[in-house]
Length: 404
Image (cartoon, rainbow, N blue to C red; front, side):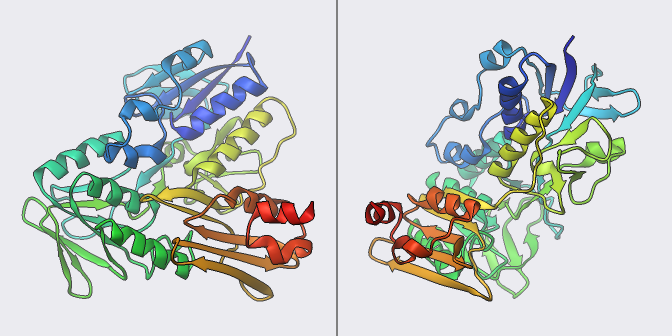
């Protein structure tokens, strides 16, 4: 008889886990997936494309209803889990349904970070995290034209791009001195700022929000340096926080996220966590690729294989506001490292490679990211690069041609 496996969360991590389980242990588990949103799992990375009108909401669905059905997976969406009873191994849903489990996986993702400043509860102050946010943002554009986006990371820039495509006058307010500071170095960030501004989006750096202005509906953003930015809609995209409430209330150990070991197991046997809600070796990854890597390892572990998760090499390979950017590893460099750079302002491209100990340890690409995955493979494998160091900056094609 199949073991009962319940996955709390129906996002990208949960979908990949089910896919991996189907490949590695077909028939071993009777799988039930519980989703809070009232639709099947979808690709959150493409939300800005839906907002911009470049894709339909149905286009970003990860798997069809038939795929879930053919896989024998029970999917309950639109009914969140409200309680987990560890002792009796039961999950209670908001509608009163009770599901028994032998193994439980938390894949509850994260929640948008909300600024705790005066006026945060004003009408017109929105977040950008799911499909329902898209509906609210689209309606906001119809009501007014001035939009302020709090946050110059990936999520904020995607929200800004989508709103600008809808015809809004958009200003991005970013706390730090450069955009996407976690993924880009100073040079690439400056190029990204210029590219974003070319699309008609205003960018204000070193912008520390003091309050949102307005009586009932937001009318602007007050910054701590005294500046005021007029806006009839504000989108807060300043970060995310792991969604750990249900796990914490159930008695699992949590830090910033749900604490897991190298098997992705929590502090309670037979209960696991993956994706943005999980904290492994002190790190919570807010990216898709680590969640997929965790899903693969957990599926193998649940299949009885000797699989361990040792952490993920952070890499970003994205199209931000219409511009391709890539970064991986230690791209800032440090003592004992050297940097190779190549820039072509006319083409809007920039490359920076960081070498240490004869190996590639970090890379930043802007504009032309065709060799990004090749550089990532070199970083992950620790391949010595001294033999082709002089050609490395020019990409894989030249290196392979010179080696032939």
